[in-house]
Image 1 (cartoon, one colour):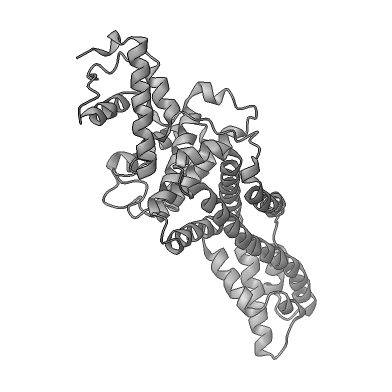
Image 2 (spheres, one colour):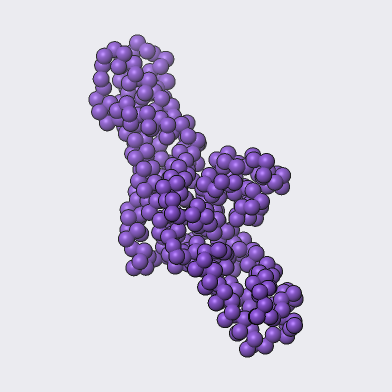
Amino acid sequence: MAKTKELSKDIRDKIVAHLQAACEELYQDKREAKVAAMGNLIKVLGKDLENCPHFFLDFESKRFMGNLLKVLACSELEHGPIVFLDFEHAQPTEAETAVWNQVSAVLEEAHCILAELQSYNGAGQEIREAIQNPGDLQLQEKAWNAVCPLVAKLKRFYEFSLRLENALRSLLEALTSPPYAPMQHLEREQALAKQFAEILHFTLSFDELKMTNPAIQNDFSYYRRTISRNRLNNQQLEAENEVNNEMANRMSLFYAEATPMLKTLSNATTKFVSENKTLPIEDTTDCLSTMACVCRVMLETPEYRCRFTNTDTMLFCMRVMVGVIILYDHVHPVGAFAKTSKIDMKGCIKVLKEQPSNSVEGLLNALRYTTRHLNDDSTSKQIRALLQ
């Protein structure tokens, strides 16, 4: 038996070779995706390993893998994968180009959607005047003329959610396809991982703006009431040609959600899992949990944070982390808060709470109110207390 700190370079090289062979077998069998980051293993073995005194050299023994796991358990791997996702500068490789181009067109429109939503002021004044003066036809017409272009804008938002759903599906197919493990996908396809992150960033940004703008619901409700009233009077308004009754019903369900875009992504992810019977659900949930872990490590590690060249990247990274946590919680059978979850929820929440409250309160509220399993019995009291 040899103690770790006595390892020579030759023996250490032999360890690395054995680990590489063992991990290649694990790749093929898909039994343990966490071992996918070979760079981490080699980095651990490249140190003095003084924190792993129980490791002993017996390559012939069946207990070898047990010893390997002891090394992993006492290494810095328990703090998360050592990989940096370049959210600022990642460019598509040739293999990524087809999906990247498809999603890029959707993301370009996303910027316009957010800008329109930010400037959405509503027709509250006109609607109030029309309601208070039901016999004044001029005020009724003024309110109607104010609401119609706004409803057309809301229709565009809803139709964009359908395009976003298709884009998410394309990214999920690319980032969960065999034979690669989630960490390998993130390392190999950084441009697609960045687009996935941008979709989540847009989603949380859209929903935050929607939640703080009651004019959206008020405008659409007034529009539907006016349409219904005119139908009773056998009148059809020109605006009905653009937003017919079927479209109005779908839009009503969409905007009734507190976080409509997040609900769209959640449903799309669940549908992706259910329709791909040959793809284990773990392939999708592991993709989400791995991205959450990578974001957390990037946020809490100074050497990674200092690589951000844009001050907004911190908030971007936090939004992405929260977004994938919520998706994971909706898709995984037991959710993100259970002890068996592959997401370090305590670590993620602590990272958020270390930031200025005005920049993260919306994200903490998203975890409080839009997740599915927070109030389950399996959620620890510590995690619930962190989110109070």
